[in-house]
Image: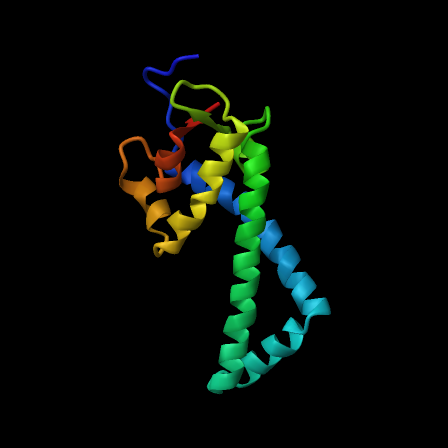
Length: 154
């Protein structure tokens, strides 16, 4: 399948697809942390005494662990989902978009691994690789450019 003029996915659809995927992961990990790993005490102390540097630092530490682990789980999930016959995560399927190579073909496992591992670089540079989608003509993030992929409408 060749794409001469691909139907590039809308930025909003990509964002909503991400939120559909990541929010359940964050909620699940926050719940596990809250009920089993002391995040409930950290959260109570933070809300009770916000001006205390130690409680604020402890809260930020726990929050960042949840954020980073959620992102890592999402990246691994996307590796498998984007290399599958669905060509995208549940969020992408719900939003009617999919990930393809420049020829319009489904991603190979290798392309999916490259695309999703480089999301770490996109996020690490103050989210610059993701914000790039806002300004790029083909709405590609750095991870898309690296893996030579496009996110298109189904």
